[in-house]
Amino acid sequence: MKRITVKGSLLATTLLIASGATAQDAELIIESWRNDDLAIWQDKIIPAFEAQHPDIKVKFTPSAPAEYNAVLNSKLDAGSAGDIITCRPFDASLALYEAGHLADLSDLDGMTNFSDVAKAGWSTDDGSATYCVPMASVIHGFIYNKEAFDELGLDVPETEKDFFAVLEAFKEDGSYIPMAMGTNDQWEAATMGYNNIGPNYWKGEDGRSALLSGDQKLTDEAWIAPFRQLAKWGDYLGDGFEAQTYPDSQNIFTLGRAAIYPAGSWEISGFNSQALFDMGAFKPPVQNAGDTCYISDHTDIGIGMNTATDNPEAAKTFLNWVASSEFSTIFANALPGFFPLSNADVELQDPLAQEFISWRDTCQSTIRSTYQILSRGTPNLENETWNASVAVIKGDETPEEAGQRLQDGLSSWYAPQQ
Image (cartoon, rainbow, N blue to C red; front, side, top):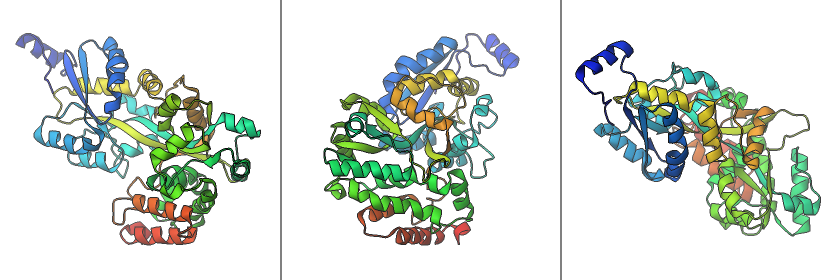
């Protein structure tokens, strides 16, 4: 970090008295794991901010993603970390706040632009403090090959019955693998499987909150039902899906060999550059026509202030700008598939990204069921859900057995479930 530079001690004193150390001639250093975004920050985001705030200079200094947590903690302990800290959701950032490294931003003006769900990834368990401005989420659903659908004269499925009718049509035709997903890497089965379709069964935030409070259990029908749907997926994933890796699935879809891809919106940029066919997206089908739809609109990236910054006013000025519609528009269009979490109106240029974000208008948003609090103990519910989702898809475990195993693990350490 660099201190505010003001020529002349008298002027410095005057400024401090008059404005409480305003953000003049300040330099802000941003810590981040998003090294792939360096050019976007340098060429688009920072110039837009500095055009409005010429006295505040910003530098984006990312670390390698896998090394970020360790590097950041070392810098914080040494007192050499930047002024602005990019925040991963939930426990990693909560630990930084509890250690006194992240400032409480609850009173930041821009925080009024975010819902409680948006702030959940960077708030204390009781919601009394929020320590990072929510920057972006990723939305789950299904990306599909429009040309494949047109060839078979199929419509986008709205209900679960429609969904399986489409899968069956592709299976019978044989020209395309109905759906590209493997189970080798495990996490996809839970992230793009269970937590993609699950919110329609457990009713989004209502069910997730009930699980946290202990009012619902993982053996309840709302939590078993998604496993019942996953148990049917194996018939449509193609030969050898058990050994198929995440990159394998991406390639199978973008090469035009599969009709549907259970997706996270982060795939959009890569798929746009690789697929030679028109793509569309559809939200997780509801059980019955007319049902309220729920989507996993998962908090992914936030940004906060290092409590040790020498430039707190400049940092708050920047964070308020991050909460604005201007930043949201720049960021969302530079990184299609990473969606603003603010209530500000944002116009997206990418049609696939626009399709994903449009679901917010008709569906209720929630976050992944295992990410807040429930994966702090041993066994880790998130990792166990990976394994259970795979086991159900492969037929190694019944939906009921999977739910009971997850419940037994959670209740072994989490008091509200005991």
